Length: 306
Image (cartoon, rainbow, N blue to C red):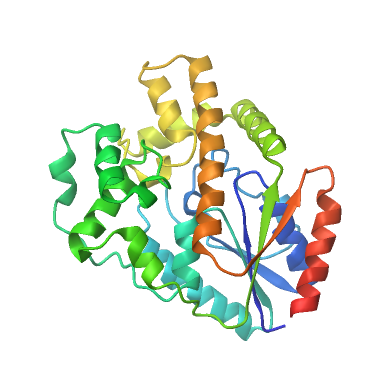
């Protein structure tokens, strides 16, 4: 099958489980498109797939950078497209799976977004401003893009402002103006859990990750980054919140509650992104109890459209 399959959906929607099932059915290999899972050292925080869960399926672009390194959208675009070509050349099916909308767009769409285009020391003009103040500036200049970025994600907010400065255009408009797929043999499926079930799953996942050692993992990553709050590997949900706890700005219970709330908001922003930015997505609603049935329906849908 000379087909590229893409699985999108919010965090905790079942994308990982579905990707392995599809890979087994269609002789596939998975390519990660989650920006936080690029890094080593935050496996718990990003709920990264384990070797056991991979069940023998080859996975690419997972844990390829140290926790204190950086990785750009342009880097992902280049490497992911190389992986797609290599997998197709082997006669196998590339399966893109992850929740970072910008990474998915960079891979699939015909627009340039390179790490070479930067303004020297651009971030210094914002160094006296809080994360919230930086986000509010972005919100005034590009409301659509600001809604996709958490106010604590200072790196992405400043980068979006830099793109406006460089191009004289909003980042959201640059993407919209170039909304053309570079792959003709493309099939996109989306998972859409019932909202109350999704939020419950997210709340329970935070508690589960906490028991697995989430706080210690973020603390170690924070130290490895020399206590740099802006490090890319700390942009995962849990990173900014736990740093606030480590710096005694909030209590432990407040940290847990904040992680749950921000995860829920993130899931909502992911759904908004995928619905607004991607065309021709076939969405499948589920309530987790019927996930196996929905997975089978998705596989049948793929068979009918290959």
